[in-house]
Every structure is written in structure tokens, then in C-alpha cells.
Length: 269
Image (cartoon, rainbow, N blue to C red; front, side, top):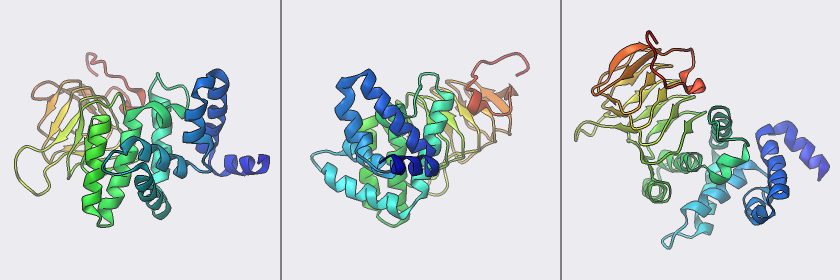
């Protein structure tokens, strides 16, 4: 076992850190021993842990945990990018959320992370042509987490969805890498058109709580959208927009707003 752990640490430092934190969590709170063992320590890889946790959360009377587990296992085995993205998402949450003190927390407790991983499996199902099953995942994700992401949406890596209540992301939406968004964000359409109708969010964008971005518009890299804004027009890179409807009110204030999570509007910023 020590040799296996050493090799695991070398090959997968994120998973190794989660394993270590799991042991610490049990020492500090023995009542969580069953949860930590079943969700983390029982598994040999992060892929297995993600499949277990996702199936546990999405199971219902309509589809059992075992059936969902088999679907998730298949997805992770056939598309290694799913777990790679999950690792990046865990690091993103740990780096950007001051309430996150361990890599273990997103996997066990944070519904934004859990909903995002559910979407990733649904997106894989969509891409391989299993559309009805992908819709089932979308439905259960919405019911379980209050997060409604269409399985055809394209979402990058290193995503943090903080609190994650009432998130809506439409079918033709695109979200770049290293994006941060808070609760009640909508990336929606503006009508009944069936073509490309949802926003395209660049890398490193910070989207504040309650912001609505509507229509097939581009939000430039490393821009900021203030809380409560309604964005109807394209936003250049490295700008801050605010208001209803949103207008440019200054620069983004830093090179990576999604990393700093600074949402304060300052004069000239």
C-alpha cells in the first residue's frame, strides 16, 4: 500500500492530496468516517470517486445509483479529459473560494463542483449521441442541485461556480477556461430562434451574482460582469460592465479577475 500511495502521489497529486485530507478529516471528525470512506478512501482513482459521488447525488426512483455509476464509469474510462477537467475545477475552487480549505471539500460538499461534474458526464453523453440520457442527467442535476446546464453547452476547465444556486446555461453557450461565476447567473437566449443563440464567455471572466448574459454575444477574455447586471451587447476584453442594461464602466482592474474574485467597482477600474 505505501508503494501504491507513493506512485499515486507522483502521478496524480490532486487525488493524492484528497486521500491525505480524507484521513485528516476522519481523525478530526470520526462521525464522517462512513462518508469519507465510501466517497474517497474506498476508491483507487479520482475517476472512480467522481463516478460514485455523481451517481449517489443523481440517483432517484427512476434510475438507480448502480445504473448511474456504470454510466459515469464508462464516461470517465472513455474520455480522460473529464477527470482532467475535474482536477482543474477542484484547484480553481480551492484557489478562489476563501471558504474552501481542502481539496476534499468540493468533492464532498460543494454543489457547484458536483453539478459541474454531472454536466461533464451529460456533455459526454451528448457528444457520443446518447441525447435522451444526457437530458436525464440535466434534469436530475437541476432537481438535485438547482443548476440547469444544457448538455450541449461547452464549458472549459478550471471553473468555479460559487454557491451555485439557480445557475442556468443554455444549449449553445460557450464558457472558456478559468471562469468564475456566482449564484443566480443566467447565460440565456433572447427569443425562440433555434440556431446559435447563447453567450460566448471568454477565458478568465468573472460573472457576479445574479448577472444575466443574454443572446449570442461575446464576453471578452478577463472581463468582469458586475452583480445584477443584464448584458445584451458584446463586451471587449479586460473591461468591467455594470447596470441594466450593462454598460462599460471601466477596466477589469487586474489581469485575471476570475482569479482575484474582486467584485468592487472602483473609480477608473
